[in-house]
Image (tube, rainbow, N blue to C red):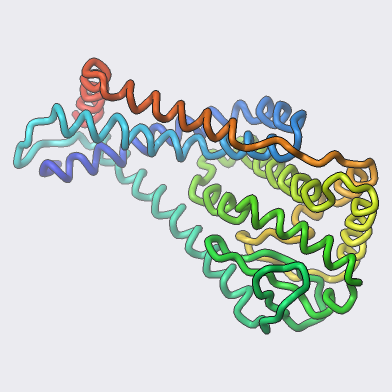
Length: 317
């Protein structure tokens, strides 16, 4: 099949992204038990951040390879021919890349729509201790969740609002505020954009469950800030809410009872005087930024670009 200069670059980029994404997806599936064990021995906030970085490695690796190595080597070394042939294998791999991107984007759009519709029937109100407006929904259900990604909104059911005392509502809102400050719904969206391609290996799903558990623990720690009285109060709120009926919640929500299967562990941990997490995310973020900058500088070396271009030529032949 023949392509023009831009079409050949697009085919190369899609094929390269799919191959790098799939390889890294397999790698993290195999290494997931080690990553989970390492992360769960850290403070919850740092452990969740580490697991998120590993979980997003296929997406980040594929984008970095295409943006830093594939495209620059092609633009610098590929002659601008009107038409050039591409092998059937490379075309098939590029089409798989299209399918991968389409599936992840479609799943993300569906999740965003469901999250938006979850808030739509709510009646806006102001809650003490919450900076923005909150939405109160009707119906016999226990709901307290943060919905949305860029402009997150708080949703609470009228039944739960009536059932909680002022101190109980305050500690529950502090938990949701911790999710808001950590941008946990945005992180969930990024995970959706990096789908698991190897469902028969349970490592990626186990990593996502561990990340969700550590995320809730981190929000609990930030909410109680090391105060044992607040820990007991939050544990009591969790147990009371768990006994109430709960409707299914969209994927892009951070609710008070997220990961309900881990409720007993959360309660036991709160009753065991959890320490506040003071671990800053600045060090891991700075390390990732330095690594990306180093990779970008390395990619500018002519020998690296020639090697990548040669490999891409072999892929297209």
